[in-house]
Amino acid sequence: MLDVRCRPLALAALVLAFAGAAAWARAADAPLRIIVFGAHPDDCDLDAGGSAALWAAKGHAVKFVSLTNGDAGHQSEGGGALAKRRRAEAQEAGRRFGIAEYEVLDNHDGELLPTLALRQEVIRRIRRWNADLVIAPRPNDYHPDHRNTGLVVQDTAYMVVVPNVAPDTPPLRRNPVFMYSQDGFQRPNPFRPDVAVDIDSVIEKKIRAIDAHVSQFYEWLPWVDGALDTVPKEPAARLAWLQQWRSFRPLNDDVKAALRKWYGPKAEAVKNAEAFEVCEYGRRPSEADLRRLFPFFD
Ligand SMILES: [Zn+2]
Image 1: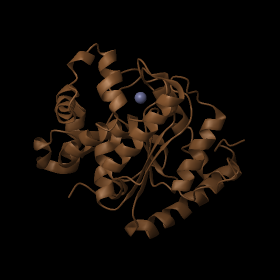
Image 2: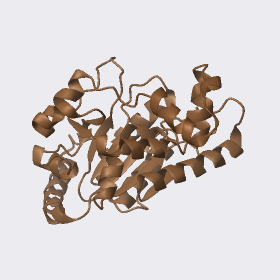
Image 3: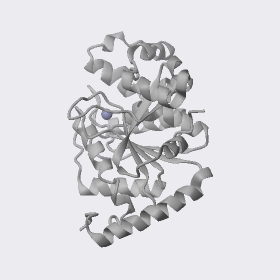
Image 4: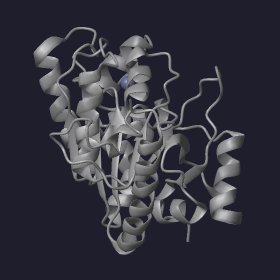
């Protein structure tokens, strides 16, 4: 029924596209509205935290959404108590990034499915945020929660403009740009960065924000790695250990090429970056659109 091959709907989509173009032009000076989705209460931080800090510092509105409450992510804690702890950690991380909101949905960790109900929840959040840009993982990932987050968000890329879908929340009149966050998976196709953001100026802020996820970076992930006994107890030593232990995003050749495209010769000095790939669905941005969405390249 919603297939765009259907002529009246194709016409409606065209009208929406023109209305969207007008709205885009009118909103050229308005603060950007960015919404980032992750499966767990620390995924958005790792994928887009540096960029979020840069956007926030320029007065743009950034919201992080975790689709699960993280209640399986610990070796000795779990359930409601862990979910409560992780929600508090996410709030503190959001505060340290300087973003507007960090919402944690109450779905169980390790059990996320791409249901219609979840898709509608995501549609409502993108609409209420009046998003210009939506960021999510790709639907290829080792972790089923990550994979299903990618699938669910990707599946909203047209539905957010369809009035009869989730009709309790007014549709967007212009489709946001949807982008994928970086991953290292090769099949069926590797991540291909369209934009890379130099986050060297905020890498300390990013690590400080990630440090708020105590249950993860000082307890659960070191335990998974068999390295729990290497974690210092004292907060300052712990933070220094975190900087050493986690290599946040290795700059591969594709990311370096993307940095050169957007920053020119300055790219050679960049040590830390976050990269994003344009999703085929949603708005297809021009280069000028991408420069407006990522106002970092001057
Ligand atoms: Zn995760």
